[in-house]
Image (cartoon, rainbow, N blue to C red; front, top):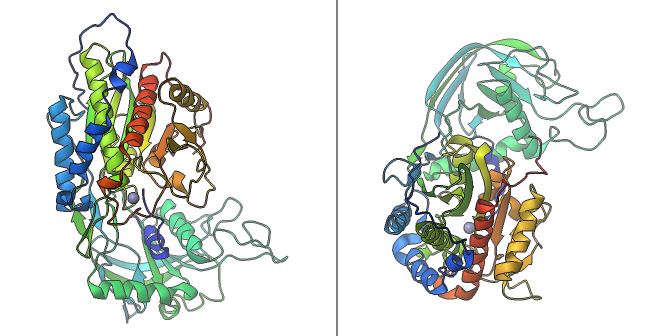
Length: 525
Ligand SMILES: [Zn+2]
């Protein structure tokens, strides 16, 4: 489970930033009907405990993305799948899906315009990381407030592809004092603050601009001081996905620099091309980080092209101030749950009761850094086409209880998202639970407007945003959440067993029912 981001992490977010051989497992024909209980019973608290005491031990150093502890974790997972005889969906014994990441650092940059030199962190600020390059141009396109809404666009009739645009903060009002995009006095996403920065950056990017220079005097100094201090300390910023698409640079500029580019910027909001002799030299300081998702696969017997994903994140917070953040609940619990579920499916397959649909066991990296491994899977490199992906059952923290939950059975689990896209998935989950596990299903956090925003805070979100039905299994937070005290001795293994079996039976039903899950509540994108 990812923590909510700080304001500056959100500011940094402004910048961003096949198919395969399907190994088949040998499956004998078995004419006797399968009873999933025979396989669900192979999921035991003893085995979960044994694995978790290894996976969340100090030896794994808190499994921080890109660090040696995370490498130990991925190798451990690979060995478990090899021992179980469950293949990878990738070629041969390659269980790792590379996830290219980078540690963002402000680039070194020098800029001159119309004969004057300007300084990074004093006159301008490149937000996030940028590639090494030289930009040498003779004009920029002034786009006024840089707004691009349905009923009002500063980009109307302009071609800014590959160009640098200049914009200023704020949103104009009409003669009645109403904002032009909303027609009311309510501020919009274009009007002010952080949200307007990202709206304007995205507008410039959508129009194909190479960079946007943005004047926002009320925020410039604060951001420049913060980024300047981080750069001076030599610390790297947050880790992000290395994007392979050309991204658009976001450059905040001081009033001094803005008026050097266009002296009338404060009075005039009319779009126009402005002759400027501008040279910007950038040297990237970002570091590459090698990381990987771990994938294993059981091929379906009847509908092998339809994929059921079972996911959990393999990473955690690492070591801080000499203390190991073991992450036993977060998300060691989900990780060992998947291993037990995989073993149950494999045992069934070996008995001639392999799942009709294929199952992908997906251990994602970089969750704590911003759901990066799952986003890489869905946005950059889905091993199986997303349109063939039937559901994602995501497990993140299922070994503890929520101290804030004072009523009800301790044998519970919070379900989030089950009814969001597929009514059928929600109903099937309820039925399966009644039939096999009798865990109290608590929907307290199944609300996108919940202030905790749990729906957006684990890896299922990247599947749900693609209209793939999800269920997120979660026990809630506790005093040891994201603390070095999240250790395996505090796990309630009987509960972990019940919840793991619930996910198994649900996956079993989704994989083996005659018809593919119906997505009756898809959202338009
Ligand atoms: Zn977490």
